[in-house]
Length: 258
Ligand code: MN
Image 1 (spheres, helix red, strand yellow):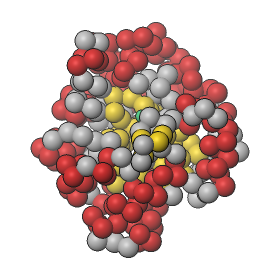
Image 2 (cartoon, helix red, strand yellow):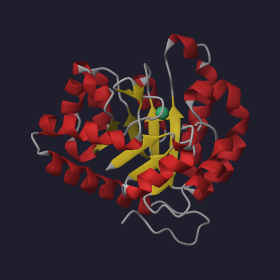
Image 3 (spheres, helix red, strand yellow):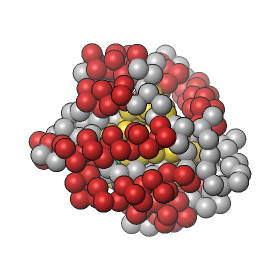
Image 4 (cartoon, helix red, strand yellow):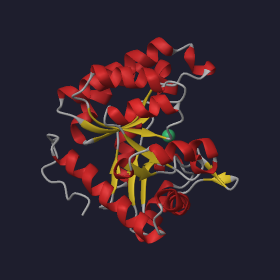
């Protein structure tokens, strides 16, 4: 099972969640909301071969943590994965739009400069603007739109711009979202939970709740659950193959996701 967008550091007991992910042999992309959270969050995954840690600066925190961009640049050299980043156009965050755009642009330019990264991107009520920025930074890497909730037209544009998508159990409960998922290219779709923020059946989502996303995806794809599980793993391998092309970092070796 694959959770391509989880905030492992924000669970009440992150170490136990990591241990459970390891026991279940889950592939997890552990995202961070601030550059200062990166070192400790990366340490959580030490020795866990299937967990990768992404460095991010969440758009909802852009106005508060813009000063951490230099820290972002520093840690960017230590990982092939970036997130959570993006833009949020909801009314409560729209007033910080300038900060959000400045931070997102800085990050995309930094990713381009280091040769590209795998990026997990938030685009709530801002899909068009996110896609505009991605167009301006074609060398930034592989964009994965997490929990995409834009319009059909924006989705078509995202597909044509080469975006990938990660979809979770909470998202798949809504018919509107399922209709969008049906249009997403199967070979560019992965699963996520966005735990612990997202809710599944009234409780905070755990990374292993992606099983419920697989159950929802299988009928959309006309696959059995086993086929869907295999396909998701094949997709992940493709994604990681992209990442291998990115120049790395200081670490001398990277065991990869095999
Ligand atoms: Mn998130």
